Length: 147
Image 1 (tube, rainbow, N blue to C red):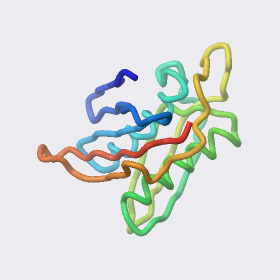
Image 2: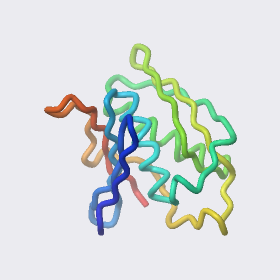
Image 3: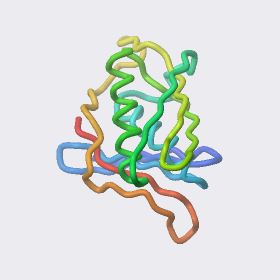
């Protein structure tokens, strides 16, 4: 599997191969940006995020004792919202407050012909789970998602 990569001004995302599943990684100048980019990487497992119009707003709140578990909760909350609302998301705003993630995700209802969803993400896993700063000070938030 080829690694995909996108690099906007405040962060980037990519995929990394992992047996039958797919790794998602968000990279940003802040931890918030890395989590936002991980959300984009999750969408990109399913479809091209640029094909998703950010027209409907969904609020998400997650709590966890550490950043790694918060990343899994965040991505699983997105998977849940995608499944129950039949939506895809292309824009995110993440804020942290004392171990709680407060986020807004913008997207639209899935249109199979236009979005051509490739796979269904079943959930985020603890495999290769990491949230840390690298030697350049960038935040990297990653894990493997079950497809």
